[in-house]
Image (cartoon, rainbow, N blue to C red; front, side):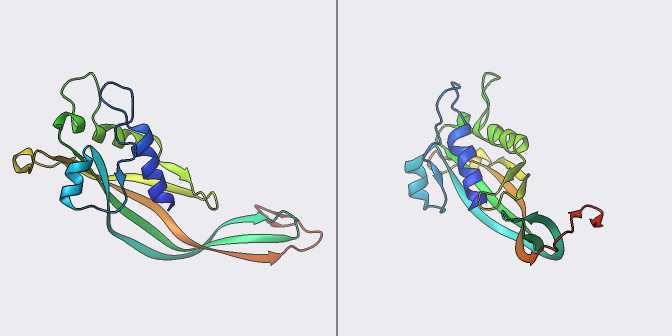
Length: 183
């Protein structure tokens, strides 16, 4: 959910209209890819598409913390590195929502790409671990194949995340754990 909430926040609250005010995509981020007729009714809108990602086994310890009573240590081990890949498709009946007609504004695609680049790391809501985000392929679908006057731009986004496991162990009384080991 962290990935989807991140995308939803950027698309619905941070992308502004051509006049620099308002958020034309507010409430128009469709998390389940709709049928073509719904896309046309919802324009302008953004649709989330899931793409195959990849996982690789890891197994290294990535963090340690004392619990609130200081009598136990919580060790976090990264079991798998996981790349979550999504494609955001922007649709509009006005091509100039997606690309710039002049230098007086930035289209949805450029704004989205800039916001991802400026916010390339964020904290997960559940445990505050850092999740990295990077841009993938992007572009505008050839306007010669436009159907029903609906234009499309797309951008893939890759989330560098993982599957973690916490293990709680008792703290050794009288010992302090620091970066150099036990003292």
